Amino acid sequence: MTKMKMRMHWRIAWPYILTLALMLAAWLIVLPLIEQYASQKAIIGGSPADLTVVHNAAILIALVGLVIGLGANLIYSNRYVDDLKTLTEAAKELGEGKYQKIDLPPMPNSIREMRELNDALQKTALQIEDQINALSKERAMLSAVLGQMTDGVMIADDTGRVQLLNRAAEKLFKTTEADALGRSVVEIMRHHALVELWEETRDGPAKTITMEMGAMHKFLQVVGIPLGEELPGRSMLLFQDLTQTHHLETVRRDFISNISHELRTPMAGLKAISETLLDGALEDPAAARNFVVRMDSEVDNLSQMVSQLLELSRIESGRSNFSFRRVEPWDLIRKPSERMVLQAERVGLTLSYDCPPDMPQVFADPERISQVFINLIHNAIKFTPNGGYIHVTAFQDGQMVVFKISDNGVGIPHKDLTRIFERFYKADRARSGGGTGLGLSICKHMVDAHGGKIWVESEENAGSSFFFSLPMVRADA
View 1: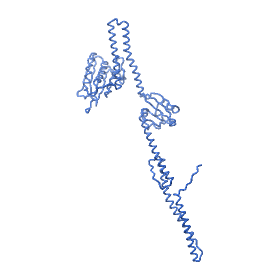
View 2: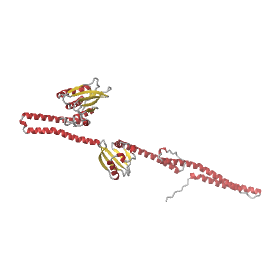
View 3: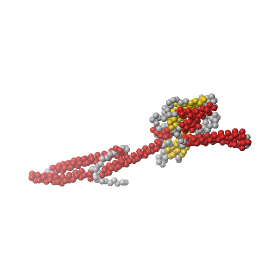
């Protein structure tokens, strides 16, 4: 058992000591004088000494001393009580977290323990303020990091109640942190695989799954991590969106498949021709010449494919050089259209072109835009039956000049409209001929490099209209 040390503080005890000293002094000095006076008076009067006066004086001195002592004690006690009240209020505010409101005045005349308590409370308030500020900075930093993360983060307690949800997770589950906090993970995630992962993570080691979720076909890698050591009973789910990675992997596989398919046809043709020539066709000059012409055509197809692949690679990697300058829209339309007129007439098509007067200039590379026109007109020629027409024109739309290449050909099925600008994609392989499937992809990348946009409007058996826009030259440029 701890023994409490009793201490006597002279600042508290001195009124009592002073009162006692005065009473003793009065008794030792005043009472003998009064007694001597009463004795002399009795001798003179010849009567016995009356000590009642002495007794009354003693009582009076005791009462006066008591009053003086109580008054002095009251004055000094009130001073200490006020200091104690101030310290008590400060301690209450500190306990309530109101550390910023604590402003204790100095207490030079108070007892040492109260002064030490005053200093301790002030020091504690400053330390708490520093710690709270540090925690607030760390929390703000953590909140900023979680908010800017592209991966979703969810933390739940052992009962399955959501404790934290960052911005990426809010978008993923179409909710807000304010609505999600305190609700069940089952209610928020609404997917049995995620709920099972949380349950396994809560009671076991970390685990990772890959899954497809939602009507948007998002591909997610979800990592469940128990937080037992740092946060007992809690677990974290980390959602990594692999949709873009999955899409790129699909594009890579399609690219390899398509280029293998596109290369196999001319390679097989060349192999067949070479075998035929080696088997004796070289002895027949007319047949040999025919086979050599076909070989030359297949080699041209291969060269065109390689050139287009290299051009597409340069554009996508940003290594293709563009020579931008001010150009009249009419010049962009006229030159490639004139080049393609004879090709259109050769297959029985009518190619017309025009441009409204006073069209604003555009900022473009004429050679690259001419290639876009040629690719689009060539596609229109290939998919427009004999007797059809192709028309090229332009119009202004806000700060953009839009070029339009329309035809009355076979059109494009609705299911293919969103994919025709992909590499190697052919809307109708049966009718697409020997093209590489790279022309429209090259057009898209070239227009994108100009800061424009390319799109198509089409109905099957009702023709197609390809549009692409280029930014006009501003008046203050």
